[in-house]
Amino acid sequence: MAVLAYNEILPKTIIDYNDAPYEVLSAHIFRMQKRKPVNQTKLRNLVTGQVLEISFHSSETIQEAETDRLNAVYLYSDGKASWFAEEGNAKNRFSFPADSVHDQVQWLAPNSVVEVLTYEEKPMTIKIPVKVDLVVKEAPPAVKGNTVSGGTKLATLSTGAKVNVPLFINEGDVVRINTDTGDYAERMEKA
Image: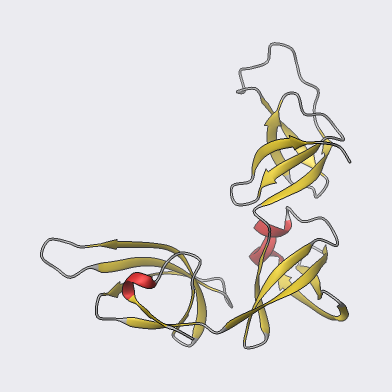
């Protein structure tokens, strides 16, 4: 893979740091007074989930991690783990600890296709679409004149996730959710 200079270590890049794959969560290049520039990064270990803050100096380079991607189907979560199967090969099943992928899995309905990042042929993490369409399972009725809460109410989606939606959203509506922020984006037409 490519060798990256200090200023090429950018968010969402996967690097090989201390013989382990790390995803760059944030990067900020700055220069203090007459010193050389520094790239202050926040890295997440894809194996352990540990987050580190590392500074890369202008003279440093780092290896980009050799990763592959495969499509997988989300099967279910049992509280301890979230299970997936390789798309087109249901016998190749694997899981992730529930706490490591909970933020993404809460937006997935069973049989949703996701992208799995692999390192040395082992599944490391999942990438889900930025926007997903989900059915509203429970939504309290709107109370006329209730705009104290900003014109929103807490609704439960078909996956069990809870999200603030506008007052006009009802049970059975299909809503589009931004999975990066967990926010309501728009109401979709019913199928």
